[in-house]
Length: 399
Ligand SMILES: *Cc1c(COP(=O)(O)O)cnc(C)c1O
Image (tube, rainbow, N blue to C red; front, side):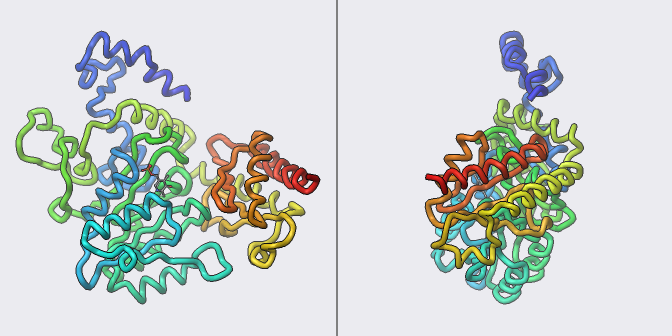
């Protein structure tokens, strides 16, 4: 990542520290990027990438911690309205967070967290089924919170329709955008989303554990949002005067608690600058649609491919695969989740693919996720990937 090296090379960082010590935090930074307000360079890019206003986003913390902060402010269960609606098999960290939030309010997670499963024999949720549950159970639901893009199936949920339906029933609607940010175009502000959180080390490439993101719609006024405060959420004009009383920044940045990790933020800024140079989400999405569409077409030509509706009856048959990610490009991002049959085949295929240099992501029991990321994957990669998958199957058959 050339940017990162040019702007924040270790030499310059140590130069700042050796010559300026703590002053690097403020104005003595050689590139005019004092560490104290470093995230001010990130918020405009965050706002652009999630479709929000700058004051609606904050660069802070980590995903799961931010999710807890948002639930602390927005999840206010009452005896009548206490449920949390989410998709079944949500990312484990989210499941743990939802259950522990229920417990923190003295509630039984089993009766509080409502997990929506696909119909029998199907792998992804139908929009109408989600909307029906919200209409039917909405009056007992406090919070509707789905993944923007589901990590296992790759399904991009109809975010605007779910948000509207949830709010019509008086529910709060939040989103976990871990696999959506930098992958699909988002318009959080216009969709009226209440809050969202994301990490920056999937499509945003900032490195595991890197600094994360948080969004709160501007319609939420400071007085309505109780929060666990910290000095980084305090008005920067008086932060270093260190007054005893907390005076929060208006908007999402009022949730900041601590100094941002400067090394993590530097790697994120370097990555977001590459997104900016690529024109942000509109051209990237266009290229993503082409690449994912091309990969899907090639995979479907395989002699080992079975259509998803036939996959269930093929459980005990010869090695084969299907694609469980929705076929409609509007219901997915860059990811295709390949489901391998019967049980055990996935592990062999994954091993073979890895040895051929095709890096997919193995999800037990039977899925490999392939994601042609438009920023750096090419059509040739898709062709090679499909070809080598065929070779992996052939090698399995000949063993
Ligand atoms: C990757 C991911 C996480 C990981 O959370 P961290 O707090 O960053 O470790 C959580 N939820 C979802 C949906 C994810 O995809």
